[in-house]
Length: 305
Length: 305
Picture 1 (cartoon, rainbow over the protein chains, first blue to last red):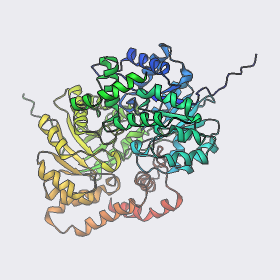
Picture 2 (tube, chains in turn orange, red):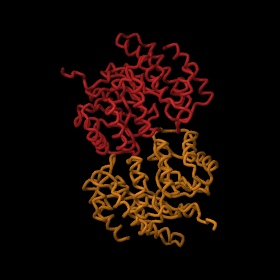
Picture 3 (cartoon, rainbow over the protein chains, first blue to last red):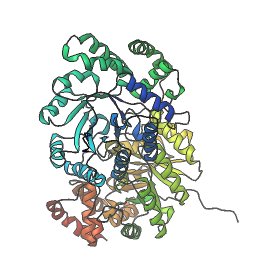
Picture 4 (cartoon, rainbow over the protein chains, first blue to last red):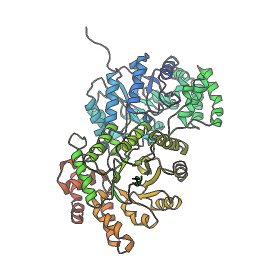
């Protein structure tokens, strides 16, 4: 029998940039994590980006990140619905995490450029991805470029995207564009139609879909999962103005606070689980005022589920 | 006999932020590294900051960084003359490296704040250092705050310094101020006389010494070591204008190029060792024009030794 399984198994659509629940000692609460991941898939998510910025990935050691993925898979999360964050400041760490994802059956990795040194040259960034892909040496690997200038401070130029796509047309699969700049997203889609672009916010999901993009991957989808899936299914028929307004309203309200503790606070209010009360430094839990302010959002979210 | 060894053994003066020589496969060339470290101590350095920004620290895995220190110590580098970079994006990594430094007899660590998440609160940064110091739990530990806003994008506010000094007066020992802003350096010295301030550039060494600062720790001291030590010994007597001009001239010339590959290029020209030809991504070696441009600097450096 010929193996007709498509190599590329990540589908288009709505992805939560999953939060990572923690125990009181700030270690990962694996049981709560798996429960949340399953909950997201059952409540509208087409897939999950795990161990990204929202998941506090860069606050964990390599061993902690690897164990987190292994435990999710043991708990039955399907590898084909996961995109795993693997980008570190140090290339050996990025290589280790990317190899580990592949060794565990995950094809799709979401990869930050090396982010400590600022204003690196395109040559230097190309070398980093070139060495990564060569070191992993796996044709099933699909790399999604993680473009998040405000956080990584290391953007992907269009010239670099072009060079990477030319060198590795079967491996450079897409981009998460967390710039918040819809013009940039549309420009990248227009210039690189082969690159599957995910908006980093559900606020621009429809704009990106209309232009031929793949979907969105966003922090706030941890709580807007149902609403955003509804938007994703209905947008082409029109009449989604009010729905988009509601989703964007939730997102903008959350964004008035530190986003990771704010989203964990909503999850704590929704689930009453203590695993949502903790964040790793440099994040700190919300104060009482922030917590009370979010109760209205929690009510909206509860009604949407 | 009473042990009268002072706990704090790092002396004031001139510190090179040591470069890290690499093999062709981009692994650390430990023999060349130890040789360079000894050479720096023999050519004017009071001490070395190893595994800092110039040392490409954040481009190495934790295991590589630990081995690098162990090999330097095996090769006879005195722990009391080393300041070891331990700051990572992930606090568990910072804790591991700081414990490792202490376990190897090094008291002084130069520690970046967690640097992936931008605009963290002072509460969050305080929590990071608080958890670090508590986790290491060693009264001999001396933490030097690594203030490098242009690279880490996470500065230390004066309010945070004050809070850290109040909580840990015996552990928070000093700061490397790599802001390039001499006014900031002088302000920190004036406001926190107990904090031993090292300028991040020999260009402001005299300004900082005059104000009561401790010295300087700088990338370019890899090549200006003799000249900067001369300046350090002679500044109080005056008549060092020409010397300062020469040092600043070398630094500014190097700064017209990417600094790490430029300094490695000068070392390659000085020593003819291939271990200076390599950098890790996202850095790239200088092109031919850059290499030729630096020959005049190499000549100046050779004459100064």
